[in-house]
Image 1 (cartoon, rainbow, N blue to C red):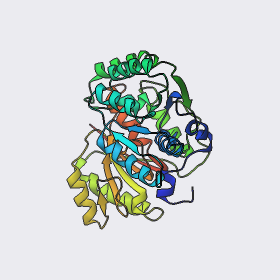
Image 2: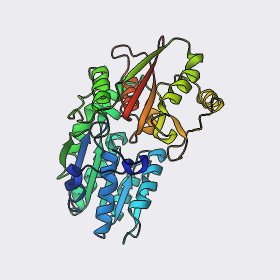
Image 3: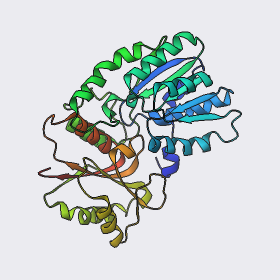
Image 4: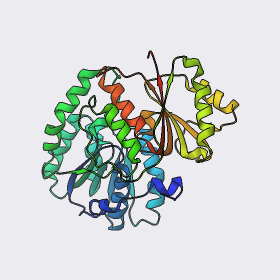
Length: 334
């Protein structure tokens, strides 16, 4: 925990080593709540199989997620004896073509792929007896191209998931339970706040390490948001570098350009790109999903009980990105 941001981002929990080192023809679906290190596990699984001279296809649901994994894997796969292929599929045919070209398929953020794609993939693996696959997913982070209020499509995806996984022959299932990304205070806070409204129970052991208490602010005048974020950032900057802090906006609560301008005028360097260093990240929950910062300022509209699944999921993603410090700014009246 004393290491810098870059080293923390690729830390693999020792309990996950056995997943990384499973045989190349093994088929596994790994479910894990936020903070359990699914994406990092996917990276090291890729590295391990590459070192065994196993050809790998790494799949992500969109370019933003894939770009981060590519950059991490460029480092982890340095001097690899085989090449790794990266894909953002736009159809089940693309997915099957990749699976047919490699020995093992690794799918990160697997909940984002369409159910019928998995059914097609299952038919493919019925014929390819020796093909392996590892799928990492969390249905509580389902996003995709859904509109936030499109509850019918969310409910359809949830109801289809078990049949989708059953479609892949010889697929084993595993849950990750150790949350090692969030402090005890942060994990307890967002679990109590959101668990009743999320589609599935949050499954993990509450982390053992502690940090500062979660601080919440209420804001009525949205025009004061940039100023409030600037004041909070200056206080956080006493303990954290700018690249260890991120602002996560949930639900389109404000204009990105306005926030960037206000923060820059206050002398705070900002960026909208996850991999930029020495600046504070200002982003949306769907962009930072799968990644974290030591300190997060999460801007959240007021959540009414079960108002829509998408908004609750976005809140879950945003709040769970913090490791040591979480500041919540809740916009009243949204």
